[in-house]
Length: 68
Image (tube, rainbow, N blue to C red):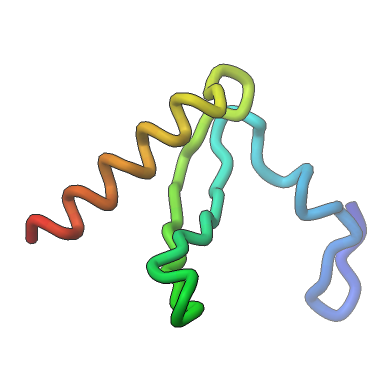
């Protein structure tokens, strides 16, 4: 890894392990009005998290957001 002028030549997808990823999900609030909300999930394990589990996590976050 060489650093020249404050930048690194390491690929950004290799800087964190697959067990600690940050994902940004786009939650569609309204198709009619084309409104959306971004949901940022930190420390997601890409090796063990399934699509089904990811959907559950998103639903839990949305429910928490709506109840507060």
